[in-house]
Image (tube, rainbow, N blue to C red; front, side):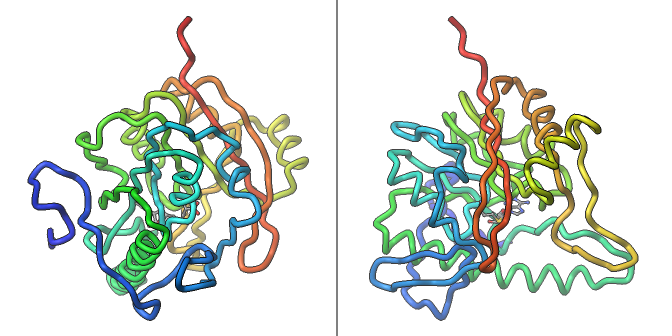
Length: 268
Ligand SMILES: C[S@@+](CC[C@H](N)C(=O)[O-])C[C@H]1O[C@@H](n2cnc3c(N)ncnc32)[C@H](O)[C@@H]1O
């Protein structure tokens, strides 16, 4: 494992900013308009309604831990709303939770992912500098978030839990540092009205997506109903919840999502 990304101050968890100035070294997950570089295309375009994607939470004066920042579009948005953001993500030193289908070359896929993650991290740093961002970055797996980050007011888990083999362990790790609020955004696979009806009929549920007959998907594990996500967050003491539905653009098409904002109860 290489350690060159980390600050030489031995206990600091924060990455030393990378100087990246060439778009050719980058991949982007988010569509963004980057000062000095212009328009870059990513799979997700959240520009129309980032507030809905983040559950309309007020970020003024809040310290935020953003799990899975990818290209940083939400990081820079939250900063503009007045947050101090610690952006957390994988870098090439850490493994993606790949679905271990028998007969597939998981090592080759892992190498492919790592090359992509390096280019994604580059895109983040290019945009970080261009936006004049003050956000700090910590690289690691979500299953071992360093305590040295210290307490945060808000943690975001946007489109991350579906990619994790162990979503509960990930939540447990991050929420031990979280004083007030957690924001979870996840995909909806049906119209919100149908999802509400299903919730009444079936209660909380999650679907396991990998299909051994197809050998797909290899990087996504779950679809969570809003009701099961409420159960997960309640488990960790975040019991005051608000649930909203919204649409965002994924590869040019409208995609339905939900956002659950859950708070620890305020003591009188
Ligand atoms: C689908 S992207 C979501 C990006 C952004 N949060 C959003 O909602 O637009 C998933 C993010 O989670 C990160 N991620 C995936 N597995 C992870 C893990 N085990 N530990 C930490 N981050 C992880 C990915 O690197 C990526 O940045």
